[in-house]
Length: 385
Image (tube, rainbow, N blue to C red; front, top):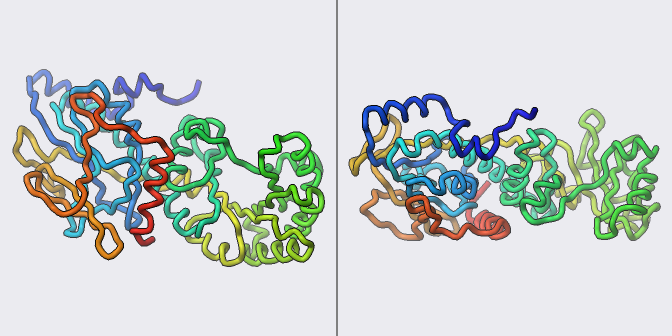
């Protein structure tokens, strides 16, 4: 058997922490039914900003429950605190606490991991200077969450994803090149790329892997001579133990291809890449990047849910800010500025917490994944790295 929870088990609360179940039992037996306001914030961030995702799955989980939900639009880029140092709530739930207590754990899980992946993908896309970025990282994670990983990576800015089910989730075709296994079975990179060209649909770009047995520039030239103008690109996945200067390998390969008339062949690079290693490779001439574990295993965003109001009165545990709030965003000197204010006050800019569910009924049109991705990419220019 696979060690995964079904959709039904998640919706029934079996993936929650046991103390929420016990809390619900106690409150019901004590006949305590108090309306609360619960906010979702993060006060511990690795980066200056995050990308908020997971709203579609949170909505699916809470639909039909007697709760009201307000949230940022999915794909919103936000800092953890506003200009005054107040934690920014990205989502709010209103309802009788015992009616939604057991969903705190899965709601946080749906938000935290997907937001972390989208954030890392967005950081990588921001430094890619318009180059192609492909997500290859599902092999490092549990296969049951491949759709979430690829969807989040795409929303964050990756141009393509490798898994069949992940691509189906976002309505795209999966992307990929040639594995080392094919080359080893056929004996050489040139034979592998020729076989690929014979049998694989012509709409699929011909990208040769050129680091299996020989020198990268030698195998690149052999692949180019084998397919000529049909070769779209070559992929460098040189092992770290053989890498030396990856940037210099790129320069050599591009030079050797150019002097032989194969300047059209693009150089795609993969293997341990992130937003810190990519800029040097761009300077060396890389045309695209395959990113794996750095995206699929990105740090989760540490969202927390906290009750801040009960029966209309402000409350909060230590370290949290009590009372219901509004969040506004405006542009100042080309950057987005957030401001959190008490619920009875206003501030300049767009009010960011949008009504999503009212008494469990969806009142918000969830956008298509391409719209969310465009929303993310359009915001990145308003934030530094």
